[in-house]
Image 1 (tube, rainbow, N blue to C red):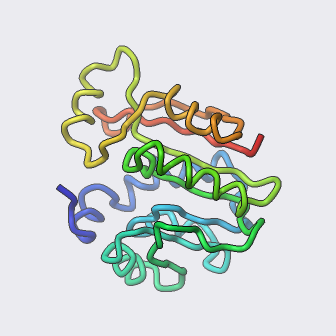
Image 2: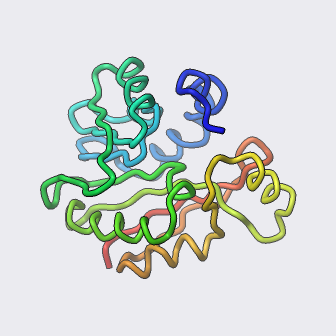
Length: 193
């Protein structure tokens, strides 16, 4: 069951939790100032506030989440995603964020998206990913995520990496960590190979 945007913000993406497990990690590992950012699957826009409004674009297929993001972060640009094609100029973005998005996308659809990213990323651009992940020897967490998460495509690290590598990206792992005790998270970035 998908939570309504307001309840999702309160339970899953409160500011303090988002800062600990997402925003602080991004700030520690990447230069964020003066970078053109596409937040792919931005949801309610929780990550937008760490970027300059003029450098940020959040897109998501869920129109209700986009409306809520526009209410929360009115200085930022949010648009409803048209699933068929990413209609952006070539070499538009320094970073494409995919935060808790991949596990909602089947592999064949993800391949098409990653191919389109090649066109819209700048030559030095990066795809930055933080994703729920099945870890070996983490049976309780894996089971919890499988029954509690709304995503149908949680993968193990090698499966995530292979999806990118098969679309001609070089993968750079940053960290594997536990979030709120029962969630495994994988943090990595990918660059065009």
